[in-house]
Image (cartoon, rainbow, N blue to C red; front, side):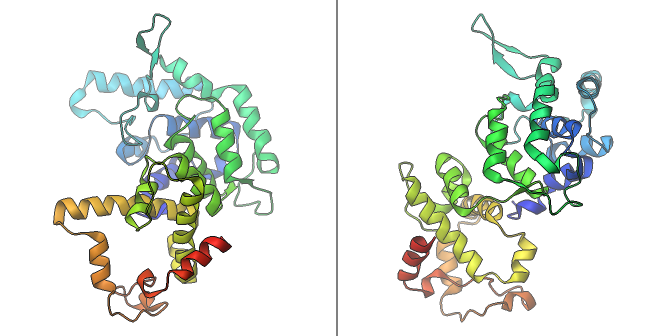
Length: 324
């Protein structure tokens, strides 16, 4: 439920076992795809910590590790270690396991072998494509070459989708892959318009729901322009009022804002179901009659980092949309 995407435990685990400095290498991109393609994260923490490194020089090394884990768990189910998580993005999807389910020639479903699963991640064509895509950043530690040009979020997203890798063609996997690349320092963050476009194209996910919780009257048929206006309003409000100190703590950018919107929906549901609290009504009650002061939250955690939108005329939001 952490709204700070850059501080998620799963991302910290990724950086621990596969530092971003390795992602600019051929072995690194293959290993990153293995990590994400098997649903690694908090649920597989014990497995990751026991391995210490998830860098694979070859597909054989990758298959050997996961085969060993598969055999170990089969021999002793009582002490099984979770080494894959097909539910990493919510619903179960076997594409994020070691044995994805695919439709066979006889129109029935069958499970792929580990070789069939992992081999595409290690193809020479994919590796060459990634290194060429990175340009001057290839084989370099991004922290050591801040002057090297970075690809945009949109370009990275397009690259991973166009690889044709199963499980990375749509949905959250290519989105989170791209976010990881940005947070690893290999690419630039998306613009508000670019993030809004993704949210509009994926209305079944949390960020779109979060905009509704924030009071924007959007429906599943809302136009890209309407979603863009709503997201820009929300993003600009935070950008305008959060202090520099707040932004540093939150790692503020559009990725943070999208993550925050996702969590708002969850918080709203949990408060209603577990404590019968309406988030919007509670916010109105707390904010009503309070004089807001910029930066007061730095010294007093009970103070709010942003003012209530109810204290401002609707005209200011029209101006945000027009200028955004």
